[in-house]
Image 1 (tube, rainbow over the protein chains, first blue to last red):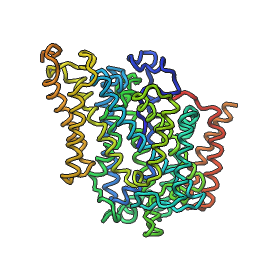
Image 2 (cartoon, one colour):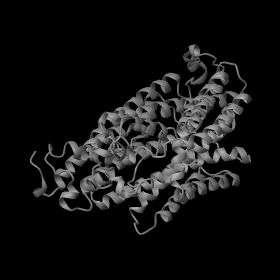
Image 3 (cartoon, chains in turn green, blue):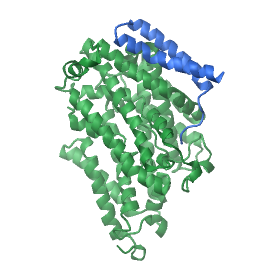
Length: 471
Length: 58
């Protein structure tokens, strides 16, 4: 899972250098290597330590998890490469400016609100992860796998302190934490690797030759999920791995990052993040959780702090705190930026403190972290339809006889075709999940086609005739 | 100075993963692994900021 969405300005650069409302010029474009490091660091986050164990709690088998992650991550890389990057390297605009041209300022404001709220909850999950590390030192009672509400005063205090720390730093010390994140990235990847090796040894695996045999019979045995969890198959894992970053590839948020790429194929660099963070780190974290269940089957709590501490001691705990902190920090910052677009009179500090307060309150409730698989799927689903709108508008609008960048061409502040495509798709998908019994991991793909179709039909109906383009 | 800190960072990275490899191979106790990894972590975070490029990718 990552939090790399750009909402425009980052504090490391002044607005003049951000090319927020102009294409990135040739001189500012970056090489392939820049993206390898960036994606590897961004996708090795604190939440990886939740996701791996939750797969185990969902009763995955070895083939389900290894095969599902290999295929799902490949599909994610291909989505970045063939959906996001071709538009990013042609238009070279941020998602937000491109959306403003298509949707109008008021609809982008609504999108920002949705984006900001989702960011706050995501940061809340990271604060929860950090609080599990603090819990080790202060021996507080921590939440269990099926806990939705805070279960002790100590837990509330731990989450509050972690949230305060993250929020204050996000408001005043963003640059410092951004630098810590860069410095920590290579070390963090190796600590995740160490988690896996230690977990394997503790499970009795002593050579790579016996890995696959033990993977099937000892580690990921499959079978029934833990009580309160949904059973995961190959398809669940594959779609989860593909769509957990749906907001940024299919949802197009990474237009803001990949617009700096000299070539569109540089998006293949996302494989570094997928296969280090979303393959090795998830597998390693899941092995630690299996080991915990092996030692005490009654201990089903998914608590990254204790898991990391048991495996690698204080270095493991530092890894949890750094991974959670360095990803929660920009998430809160970007939530603040998204909200600031709605209330531009508020100062950056004030709005970041507000976003941090929401995230901290969310972090006290373990529900988001313990249901992280569902939340991440929802996060992608909420932002996905706008990606379909951008894709259709960029590639198909003229061919299908309607005006691309309609809001810019017409002066509209709310493009109803885009707005309805977004909201109707979301409503239909959620209805299918709630009433149809289809799991949320499976509605994103048909949802994308529905959003694209709706945008085409509604644009043909809604656009002023004088602005239509001959097909 | 820069080269010295870079070497220290390299040693720290090796010190982060090597104990886990040795533990996996049965050549190290878990308590030793934890001590070595903590020491490597300290070295990494002291040495690396002294040389690592400050500017991010985007």
